[in-house]
Amino acid sequence: MRTLDLNCDMGEYEDPARLAREAQLMPLITSVNIACGAHAGHPELMLRTARLAVQHGTAIGAHPGFPDTQDFGRRDHQASAKEVESLVFVQLKTLTDVLASVHLRLSHMKLHGALYNLASRDRTVADAVTRALTSFNPHLLLFALSGSELVTSGRTAGLTVIQEAFADRAYQSDGTLVPRTQPNALLQTQQHVREQLCAILTGSVTSVDGEHVPIRADTLCVHMDTPHAGELLQLIRQELASAGVRITKPFRT
Image (cartoon, rainbow, N blue to C red; front, side, top):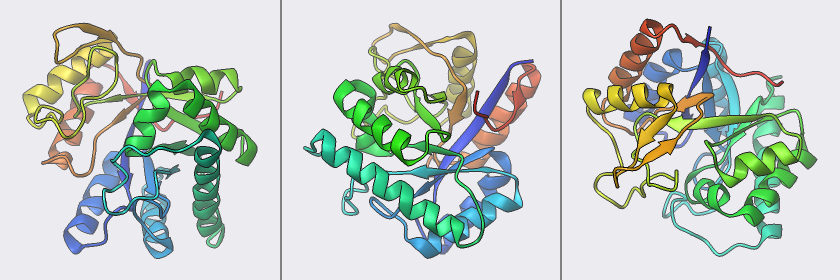
């Protein structure tokens, strides 16, 4: 039976409405990616999210990004490979130390925003990320955009790479995601998400330019700030069950 992980980025907001949404979504996912204090988050919020994850048996991952709270880590930055390696390592340590204070462990890492996109297309940046992860803890899983430079870099470094696809984001013809600044970047209706999920399961999505883009999915992301994210996750779980796909958190190979 095919298996698939469901992941979501959390620990980025602390207003009551967003915290309530985290509580709603956590039982529906199998992996959570927690902001490490650079683009968002702080130790108390990290702990709150991690404890919620433990209640539901959800795997806990780090979600490092560029140190840019004003633009939520979504603005491109000019950063050297050495700077990228350092900022990833520091954020991994930050979350690991927070988790250690309550005897919890990290399972994986997934980059955030502009850093995710940059490492997906730039091999030099991807190599800096994998050096940081390898030197910090080579047993951690690396979540990376399907078919990206980060997948190749992670495998070359001997890491277990979990290839990621997106049920709620549109793709460009090169396999990268349509920037959020564009109006068609987010898939919001159940029909669009259902069609995207079906395409992902068959191994090829259609880009906004109408081209077929090969996709390998070990984990599927739905963003917490996507409208009706809870309903979409319920839909995805139902569709996966109908397709004979078992939903489970990923493991190191």
